[in-house]
Length: 339
Image 1: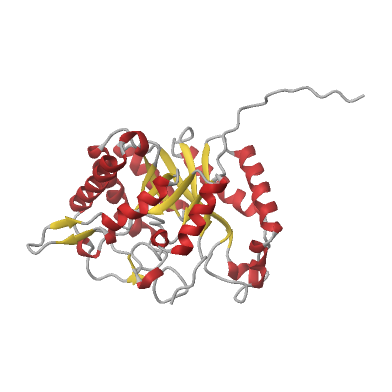
Image 2 (image 1 turned 180 degrees about the vertical axis):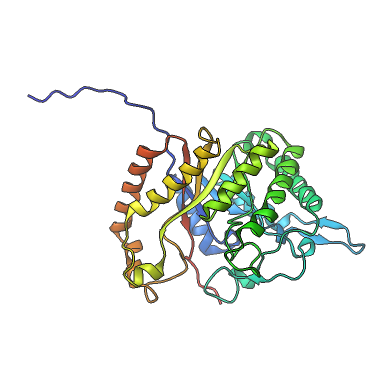
């Protein structure tokens, strides 16, 4: 006879029903709305990560003063809020009118531009005080529009992958980690000061790390030295890339993601943040979601039950290794064609 007893080992929060919706401005389009509507109807996603897209909001007036137009941003956020989503907002990109000159704009994709012909300005602001004011005004606006009861449940963080050559200081070699760190640290400090000046009851974090551990350690050391608020640590986690898959260097394996996370946790612990909430605000079995099976046939696994099995096993492994993980946000990127 087999006897089965009910025993609660521990309470497990659902950390896996969250996603990054990309590109953010697809909220305006029928195909983007179909995806968001379906997820809302299915109640399959709690929190959706988007970009603030400050470049669509901030511009210069006739006298050279900073001005704001929140109308497009409001339409995007309204659509998400009306469908019951919580939101994670990455404060970026840098508006052209406040960016340092001399850098390059990037598409961060296989195409010449981003969605709708846009480009990403990879330069830091000319004046970090102006950046702080923009963070303040944007935060003040969303709190006034949606209310503190709603926005206090959201996650806000500074920029996206500042350690990645495609997103930050793209005119420099990818090895220039120190330069990117030196430019990002005051960006984060200005973000913290601006957001908290608008409302202290908000949940803020960074750096949305692409994966450079030296950058990661430098950022956490800076936060600790400056005694800045860091309510959660945001990292990205991709198991491999299509070049390695295509060339047979790597196979599809959950343990690639787990190894990445264990390295992140080691830095977090060594820097004195062992008890800090961790958010994986982008994850995938492979980078470059905009690649297709013609470019890398192995990516066909994204289209059938193998990916479901991968996802399930990954959740199980994260439960084993990280009790502080609060969100595992699958990257819904590459669902569109760009020119």
